[in-house]
Length: 395
Image (cartoon, rainbow, N blue to C red):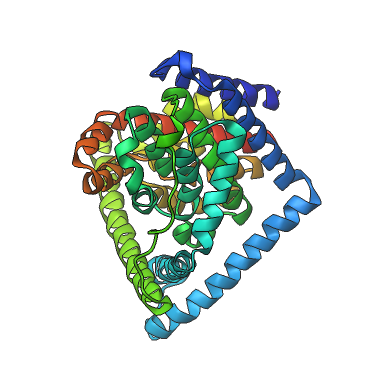
């Protein structure tokens, strides 16, 4: 029964995307079908085979080792600070972003990551029939944040019409940056965070390809990785990566202060009218129907829905911090579904981040992004639902 509900959820998600489509006649059904099958195979392989579980455990162990290295650097700076029970979130989680950003910067300078991303994107493009730029951007969005992913294809922006701009923006919003995956792993079960990365890449492409189908001439579809890094040496790459990571950590901290405080304010106002009611609870009831279809148990769907709704109206960190306190009281299936849903940038604040990035690349196209901002958020949220439902089918 759960699997039938999951399949129904996938059909509803694709149906909603179809209703939102800009050009239903140009939808690449073959490519979408291939990516759906790829998601099913990936999830099945990772969760039900020994090899898949070994791969997840190996990657998780690798991240944990990197977290250990990063913690040494953090400890050197703040080792004398007396932490409260359970640690200090800024020191124990956010500052690790600096180390991960440094590694990504060095791998980019050495052309290791760009080359891997280019060829993975090329394979996806060849198999699915999607344009190379969009495929490259989708893979790139697994490793880099929304702004960095879009900046990497800035030389192709003059070729991007409205639909192509929607697809690259959706990929940026539907994924997460590898620089903050280490922080997520400190709050959520590693296996679900790691499987969410490839699933979200495919989900973003699937939903965006339905909503904004494209057909691109070969002469307008070229990926160039020559200028992905302006660093002159590996030491400059390390320094710039560290600075970028520091900025991300501070931005996340600032957003958490703003959103958590604002959430408390909204809850206080709501309780003036309805005592004991919170925005999270209201969101839980709103999301409950789709949550049940995704595979969440009826007895847990209000709690799970509240976390999922919190992520949409604030950001994934606020939701993860809330969800972390619930992990001991929920079933493994609910934990897996919600964890995958949370592992993306699909929230209101991302609209402004993407529009601001595009503004710096091409001011005219920034207006287009702002114009389809809500459609972008809805599409990215549907992508998160699709990924989470896929995981629910195998738990």
